[in-house]
Length: 367
Image 1 (cartoon, rainbow, N blue to C red):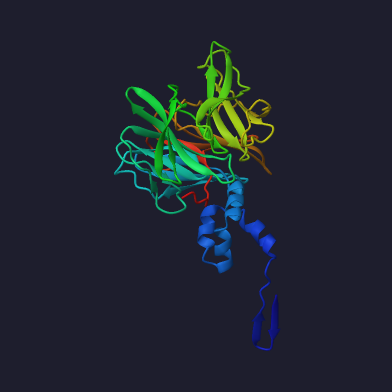
Image 2 (cartoon, helix red, strand yellow):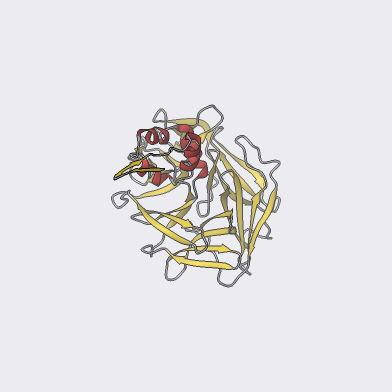
């Protein structure tokens, strides 16, 4: 609103109602919010408010984390009429230590060091938190116990003593390891494809054959610190190697599962009908078909840690966003599939083996 009187101009600012302003800001990407903190004291206070931070995390868009032998990148996709991607190098130098991202939860990366202490790191916030080192304990995954009023973040690993592997738990609040009486499972946590975190727990796909011939989702329950089967998958296939399967999170509170036939390349994606609540046992999970991709310009996937994906449903329709690598030469690609569109975008500078995962950037502070 502008009033003009002779040669003097008076500008009167019109402030939005605080609730409307918050609803706009809560949808701004977390990285941009960090830049806006210095705009005014009110915004700085708001961006540090736990309730606002949690709402912003729910609204944030998924991105890909890519880790090479020396760098970690964040890849975001603009899913407009002509989709594009943006690559940002995350500021953590891996060249001096052999670190690998072993888990992601609430925007935090757990990096396991071969000869160094592990790190818990949020790329948008402060310096990495170093994990207490124990020569007989190996940390594996990060999550939280959500059974109480406040989240209790922890790392679950194993302790090897006297030829017995036991479950070890690191509490971030106390910065200490504890070794439980339970023995660690000898089963591997699907190291090669799409482990996901939901409600603080870790989930991955499994196949129990020939006992039942069923595909299922296994979970690592961070509240009880045990592994168990969560629910049955809608996937097909007479043998475990006939298809590639990958798990992802849909809408922030549901599962999505992708299955591609090794013979035909046909790719099917299902999503859970209802959200997965904290404490659900998976007994009443219902799957619905989300989309089918059957086209010659869509890649044949390899069972490799470089493969990850997510799906969305916006004004342009149902969208599949996939990150994967080509075999020879090794290159990193993002495929965006929507209706008749299948756009292939190369990720520049990534020309070596890499690990990829879907994550959601956040301003959550767990220290």
